[in-house]
Image 1 (cartoon, rainbow, N blue to C red):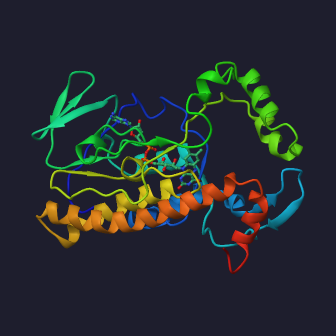
Image 2 (image 1 turned 120 degrees about the horizontal axis):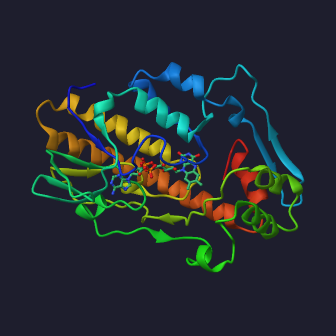
Length: 297
Ligand SMILES: Cc1cc2nc3c(=O)[nH]c(=O)nc-3n(C[C@H](O)[C@H](O)[C@H](O)COP(=O)(O)OP(=O)(O)OC[C@H]3O[C@@H](n4cnc5c(N)ncnc54)[C@H](O)[C@@H]3O)c2cc1C
């Protein structure tokens, strides 16, 4: 939109190559959709019922129920990942995305891909997610595993290649909980994809340099409590807007973008770490109830 030519090199072979996973709670990130003139399209895919909330203790006692009226503003609806990705892909020229291009390295203005191909660049923006390969250009920081044992997926004995058996095993792991917690697992008719939860250090920064920057999980991987995709959307929008204030000076735009991004995403990562700790505590439901009270915690 600001007249800067951009190309997305994407590892996946095509738009439909992989199931995109579940839903995203989209709130602050809606600014990106507004800046791109995509608000109406977003409202068409937004799931307003995702704004309702129930808070239950493990035995099923209802602590909090919030039902949002049908005409409530779409402040934080859920959106299917695949719908959101299609919406964004449909808004840019087809030629802007090069599918099947897995980035391997960058040096002296030259990108290299796993298929042996290469391309030149002026500014490399690493948007390659949690296990980013571009990240190493800016920092030595690596994602660290949080939660149960790091090798749990391999050693738990859960048959993830057999969806029905994997579902049964997952339901076993929630033994003693109210049936409302396990019903969504039983109702799933798709494959089960186990994902280790990893995070980057809270408040990670690096010295700004012209030529390479990072957005999204590549820059600030945080616990999944509803902020990561919103921050990624905001990164993209604010990075896209920065050059307007610095015409013909991309290094200055990168510096402005990173200054704001470091501050905003550090706060989101700190809050996400606090909520994750709260969710892992034995009396999580009561603590969440206190969190949602008007004066919060
Ligand atoms: C269970 C769970 C629930 C979540 N719920 C929410 C939520 O409700 N709200 C929220 O805001 N966030 C949520 N998140 C976080 C959110 O999913 C991420 O923060 C978000 O997807 C990050 O977007 P991204 O574009 O930076 O990375 P990704 O979505 O990981 O996209 C990275 C892209 O780069 C491509 N790629 C990777 N490596 C290469 C390579 N070498 N070469 C070329 N391409 C490459 C990948 O194929 C992919 O298309 C959740 C996360 C999890 C795990």
